[in-house]
Amino acid sequence: MAEATHEIDFVEVKADDILAERARGWDQFTTAAKWGIGAIIVLLLAIYLFWG
Figure (cartoon, rainbow, N blue to C red):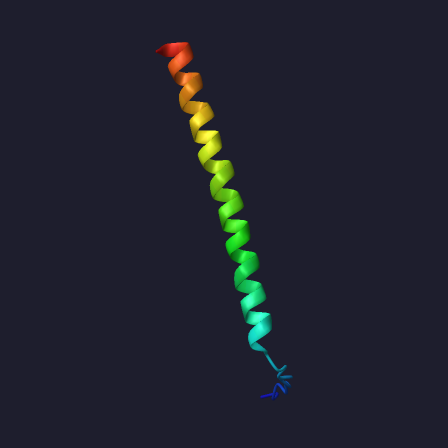
């Protein structure tokens, strides 16, 4: 059998990098939540106006 050789390069991870990634994720989540809530409100108002 042929042996597969592989190398793994480890990169130092700093706390600032982790915090920045989590902050960016939280900002994306809150933006998506705001747009989602707004879309649901518009949809419910449209349903109420057309069929209510």
